[in-house]
Each structure stands twice: as structure tokens, then as C-alpha cells.
Image (cartoon, rainbow, N blue to C red; front, side):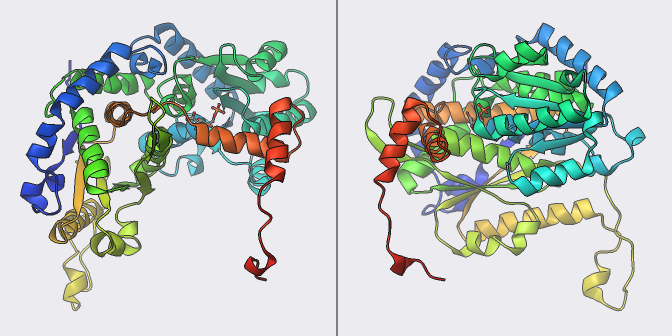
Length: 473
Ligand code: PA5
């Protein structure tokens, strides 16, 4: 059997012996954390598959579910022109990232015969203009809607459901329920009740898998399979990374090393910004997926024992080379508060030759005979060097090639690193009270009559009104 290449984590430019003693992390700093790192690793291993760590087992425990997903995907492909995911946060960012990584970069614009499935739209906002714009370009009678909400209660997604189900009843008439697939918790929330009442096809998000850790569950696997992505390879990639993450020694376990280095940077060096900068458009939305994972998991105000801390690194998305021409100035000369994580591709799946020409202009002519891939990689090397020269920390994750296998590795790597970082920081990486607070407050504004929202309304009535002097215009 062909052995798939592993992704490489290169932390050279984080280390003081490379980036400079005053800027980098020393081996001694890592050694001082070693016992803590090993304990974090053991804690994660011990809790595998339990509590909120159900995602650790997704590469192994979905045999029948995979068959069901593939069957449903085939049915969708044979019947619909469009597949629309209605979901937000963890129910949307993974499907967007994986589709961008593994399908044609202009997938929806390709003629049907060149696509491996229906067009895919992931509607992760409730901007009314966006909803109406979608309805302008799809024929609902030829569209399958995948309503995805782990809690089965998210207002944004349920409003989308209300709009679309009414529309389907009007346009598709009898049998409209065939156009809906629900992905939700087995018991909690209203979506599962609706799915059973209406007879929608449905898939479950395991109760031990939270939204931002759900990409390798039916949340991400169904849209991917519908668009012809090899979901078994995705899971094999995740399992391969899991095997590498069984090591207790941080210098042998990439996700553990990553967590240790980021926590040292945060806690000992005040490096509170992590820039995710893919040098490949296929990985552009991996940065969005990562930003949610890192921010929502690690941005917390108390430890697990309830001590006030206010911790977390601010993740920032960036794109090479585009953002060299927008953000890079800040990264090379601004405050020493950032780590830039490059996502680099070893070999592009396709490349474009740059023809010879403009011989009278040497600064243009030298590009002739190269490829765009070479230029992009040269610009990566240039940026990496510019940061090094300015004493700025960076690290590189190299994907030998972007494939279902390496993307599976990458997803699992980041989820594991997040779990380890949560352990090292002694915070609950799996809750999101700050998000819940905003959800409750917005329901209160909309006048939801349930007790907790009424209380929130009263509380909100007491907020300072502010001064007219501070409102200009
Ligand atoms: O990670 C999380 O738990 C959140 O970001 C959720 O994914 C997001 O709030 C959407 O929740 P749900 O899937 O329950 O609709």
C-alpha cells in the first residue's frame, strides 16, 4: 500500500538559536515545560472519546455512517443541481475550508459535467441581501438543503430553515421534504424533532463532538462527499496524524510541540497574536476554520478551577502572497507580539508557465521561463526571510501536496494542538460562554418570551444609555 506523505511542522524560525536570543524560544524554555507537556498529553489520551473529546475517535468509529453518507451523497448527486448548507460557525467553516482545499477553485462555475457533484453554497450568515441573492441564482426545485446545527437551536440557522421550508412548500409542493437533510444532535434541540415530524433524511453529530471540532463528523463529511471528495482518505489522514500524536515527547509529537511553543510564546513572551498565512488559495479558508477553533477554544476568562485569567491568542487570517501587499509591513516592523504560521505546499497540483517576453525590460524578462508556483514559493521564502531578518517569529506547516489525506492530517493536527493548549493553559477549551451570552442577549432583543430571555431583557434595560456627545453625524 502506498504510504502517504506526512505534513511537516518546521519551527526553526520560532527558536532562539535561529531567530535570535532576544526574540525566540530557547530549548531550555521547552525543557522547562516538558513535564507539563507530558501531563497534558496523558490527560488528553485518557479522556479520548469521552466528554467533549468525541472528535478524537471520528477517524475510527464511523463505519456504517460513512456508508450511509456515501449513499445519500450519490442520491443527492443524481437528483439536484445545487447543495446548500445552512449553518454557522463550526457547522459551516469546515465544509467551506475542505471544499476550497480539495475541489476546483472555481467549482461552482464549472459546467456540470466537469464537476463531481452539484454546486455547493454554504450560507453562514443571515444578511437578508445574501439570502435573496442566493435565491436569485438557484432553482429551489433543483436544490437540496442541508440544515446543520449541533444544538438544533441556533437562531440564524433556524430562521434560514423557516424561510427555505416555506419556499420549498410553495415551489416544490408535495414531497418538499426530500429537499431537506438535517444534521444535528440525536436528542437536543428542535431540529431533530422537526426532522422526525417531517420525515427529513438526517444525520447525527455525536453528543461528545462540539461545533468547531465537528468537521470530520457528518457535518463536514456529507457536503464533502456530495461534492465528490474522498471522505475515507480525509479520515485516513486524520488517523495518520493521530498516530503521530500518540507520542508523549513533545519533540516527537507535532501537535504537542505546537501547543507547548504557542503557550510559551503567550505566557512567557506576551506573543498574543497568531497569524495564519497560507501560501495557497486552496488553503485560504483553512485560516478561517483555524481562527474559530483557536479563538473560541482558547479565549477564556477563567481557569477550570474558576480563577480569573483572561487568556487567549488572537488568530488573524492572512493570505500569501496577497497580504504581503497589505499586512506584511505590520508583521515585519510592528510590535513583537505575533507568530506567523505559514501553510506551504510542496507541489501544486497544477502549475502555470510564465512565458518569455519583454526582453527590453530586464526586471520583467527575468520572470520568463519560471512558473507561477515557483514565483509564489519564492515569495514565501522572501517573506519568511524578511521576518527572520527583522527578528520576528514564524513557523511553517508544509503539505507535500494538498490532498484529502494531508487535509485530514492538518485538521486533526490543529484540533489536537488546541486540546493540548487548553490543558497547558488549564482552561476549558470546549465551552463558549462568551458566544452563549451574545446568543441570549440577541434573543432577548427579539422579544423571545422564555424566562431566561425576559430576565436578560430586564438586565439589558439597565445598560448605560451613553451620551449624545459621543454620537456624531
Ligand atoms: O464551536 C461551536 O460550538 C460554535 O461555534 C457553533 O459551531 C456555532 O455557534 C453554531 O452552533 P450550532 O451548530 O449549534 O448551530
